[in-house]
Amino acid sequence: MENIIVISKPDLEKMIYDGVMNVLSKLKLNNEKLEEDELITRDEAAKLLDVDYSTLYRWKMRGWINPRHMGKRVYFFKKEILSRLK
Image (cartoon, rainbow, N blue to C red; front, top):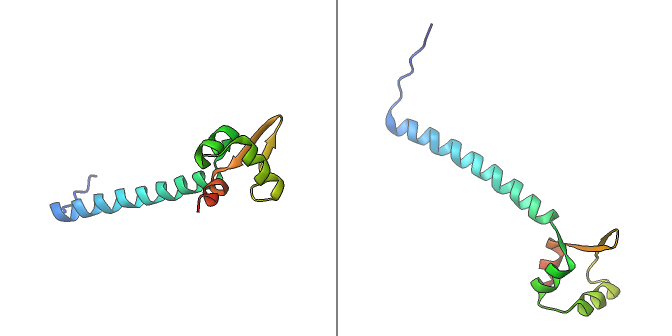
């Protein structure tokens, strides 16, 4: 048996709007979490900070940034690099 629901156009529009906004807010939260955990290469970090590799090395030695090593490659957390810009 089929049930028919009667709803006004403004109510339907509000329900759709609320649903879309709910999904978008969840996507935004997920995206922010991904950006915080994003790893960038040494090249990307140097370009982002507009510094040379030797500066990144010096900052690493002073403990200002903490690279992550994966094999022979060096990565940085983007969040940590962006905090250096402030």
